[in-house]
Structures are given as structure tokens and as C-alpha cells.
Length: 185
Image 1 (cartoon, one colour):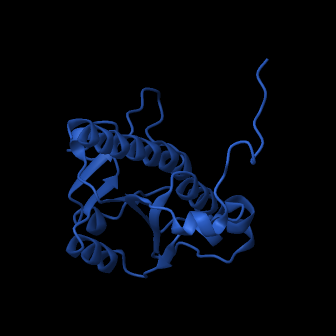
Image 2 (image 1 turned 45 degrees about the vertical axis):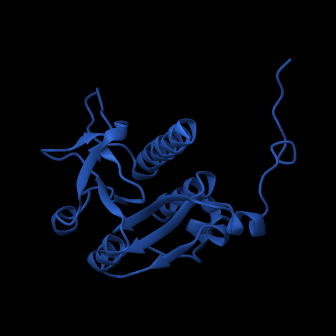
């Protein structure tokens, strides 16, 4: 018979072990996210996926905020994050540190988010406003854009849902690339 595992049975990392753990070389940049609940959800996703860092830009709310904390369930205390008002400054720093900059946006040249040939690690995934998406000036600073293919009448997903889909796909692609390099040695 199947049973749900407890946190102890799952051997969850404690906060100190989490902070010390080697992270996936993925940075998430949020720009002008309106909903604090979305921000809290993305914090939780970053914790669950062992993401290197979350950068918050523009008018996106930062912790501590009741609405963020309620959804993040403590992830604001474990995820490495910082606020940089201008996303272009953050992007410039990331590029100089060797990061590929990837916008999660439907564009005239966007590629499917699941195509592993799109990515070079370390990478930064940019998520934009829930209504208007990624600003054009920010999008033009990206090395590429990826999209989550959609087949219904709607052409967008909630930003926190999109973050979950794209982040875990990036983690999968990164882990497969590391495993394939290990297998070759």
C-alpha cells in the first residue's frame, strides 16, 4: 500500500545544510511582478529546485511581506536573494560573470523551453510582469528567449506556474548534462 512520506523520511535539508549545499547554476530574475503571492510561490520553487539565487528587480515586492511569507513557507530565509532596482544592471553583472541570459517569453524567435540545446550554464532565467511580460528593453538584453508551448485558446500561464515548469526543466537539463559528462569520464 502506498503512503505519503513525512519530512523526516524524505531527509529534507535543514536551513543551514541548504545554505551550504552546492546549488544548480541557475539564477532567476523577477522583473515587475505585481502579485506578492506569485513572488512567494517563486521563492518556494527556487528552494525546492536548489537554485543558486533569486534577483528581484523593478517594482517587484521584496520580503519581509506577509503575502510573500505566507506562500513562501520559510523559503525567503533559505533562498539566496537580492534586490537590484534596475534589471539591466543585474543582467550586465551576470553577463560579465559568464551567465547566459534567457527570457521566458513568447517572441518571434523563441524556442521551446525543453530543448536542451538552448542552454549554456550558468544561466539566468528572466520572468516578467503577469500582464505585459518582459519589457522590450530587458528582452533585448537577453541572449535568447524560450517559451512554454501552449495548445489551447490562452497564450499565457500564471508567472509562478511558468516559473515552476521552466525552473524544473532547467534543473533536469543541467543534471542530465552533468551526468552525461560524468558518464564520458
